[in-house]
Image (tube, rainbow, N blue to C red; front, side, top):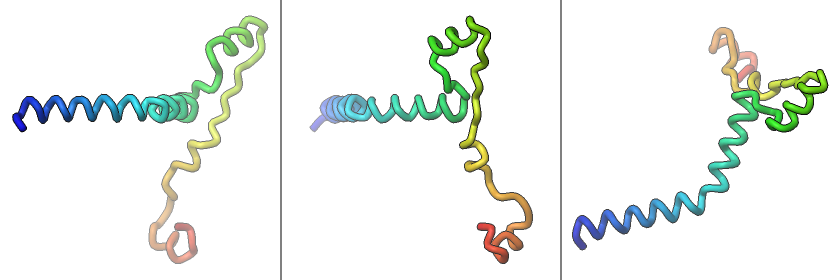
Length: 82
């Protein structure tokens, strides 16, 4: 097998894997936009609410979950904080 054949096979495998995983990647990007970028409202819904003077509340309940514990690590271990 030549280098060109190997590269061709690798590119085909990459394309196949990317195609098969596209739905998961798209869902992950939506999750990131929702949780981290606070895009919890679709553009259409946001526009409808803003045009009628209604607020678009965004409550990020996931951010505190991802934060590391604070305080003395030894004390957290002793008292069951970790």
